[in-house]
Figure (spheres, rainbow, N blue to C red):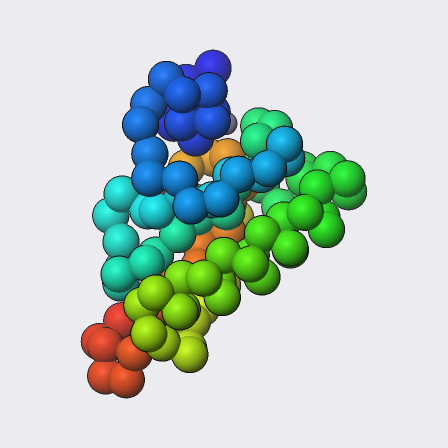
Amino acid sequence: MDCVFCKIIHRELPSETLLETDKVIVILDINPINDGHALVIPKTHCENFWAVGAEFYSEILQAIHRASQAICKVTQCTDFNILQNNGACAGQDVFHVHFHIIPRHENDGVKF
Ligand code: 5GP
Ligand code: ZN
């Protein structure tokens, strides 16, 4: 399967990994919107939010929780977006479900 996130999960492509469990991986985005922009990715390939197995729900949420706190500490911010795109019309480019964590600063100029 030609999926960039599966290749990262299987170490066929490099990534800056922030956190990893048996079910999820958290990596830095290769094209960050802000410093610390990270992606929480379940390790099983599934295309979108609806396809995520229920056994992943709590682990994904825990990873978002832990990673967002760590990222905000390092980037010295209190504000952040959790973003999740489903389908091309919604801006999904990589069709392996993932959750963006995007640190935000006053007047950072980021627009969605
Ligand atoms: P989407 O638009 O699908 O919600 O977000 C896909 C994200 O994956 C984008 O922010 C993009 O920069 C990131 N991305 C795409 N390819 C790679 C890659 O090879 N490595 C990493 N770390 N991020 C990637
Ligand atoms: Zn995949």
